[in-house]
Length: 169
Image (cartoon, rainbow, N blue to C red; front, top):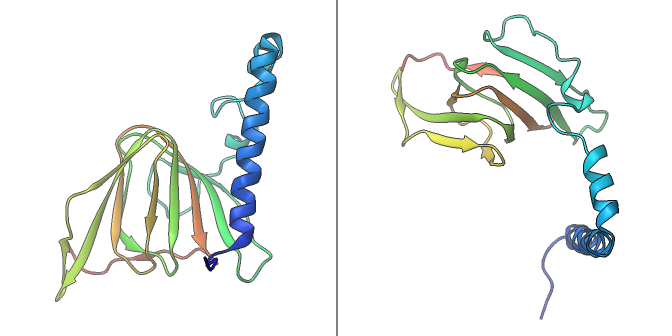
């Protein structure tokens, strides 16, 4: 059998599985340790990861973020985003692929295609719930509506960019 794939990904998966198995064994054999681990575990409500968010000028109401600046020319931009329930983003696209992981909340994404100068809905809205990850191809026009208060981890291939869709829906 010829192997086709990235050996680093395979090793990372096996390393994760081995760590998880060891952790389960240790916690199963020492219930008191398990209780102590639960006491010190952080959550999205208590972790410093979700602090220090900033309001960004010229962005939709209800949006705050915490970002990074990559030093790798082939790296990714990562943003920790918070959106208030009822807030939304107008139809837009990004120059690169992106991934959104919903840490808390519920959101919808509607895709569009251009028909002359108009934007036409392309399928039904995609609903993302807590724990879901959504991937959007670079250049794909979409909007986003935040149905509940959301905490998101947003990853954009290379440097982030935002282009409002010029056509009306």
